[in-house]
Length: 111
Image (cartoon, rainbow, N blue to C red; front, side):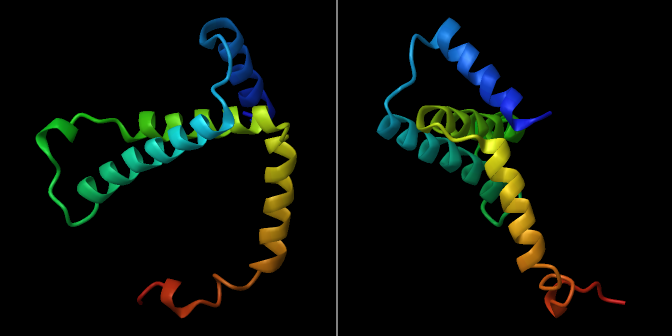
């Protein structure tokens, strides 16, 4: 799905259900909170910390979706076309990192 479609969906949801966008600073705080929730799940489920009972049923996909939602809100509020920005970033990374990861001995499979 194109990113612009997602931006439009979020904008429509805000207009129909959300009353208005939170101010940009509130959304930045919301983004930080949501990223923290993702970090908590990953560190406990895939890292070395034990998972707390109340976190066992938390859905990582749902938390990642919360992050995307808030990022899309911020993009909409600031007039950013994320599709255009993302496409540009992929081109930049492809040029900059053309051989970087392929030549990284840390990433080579052990034979």
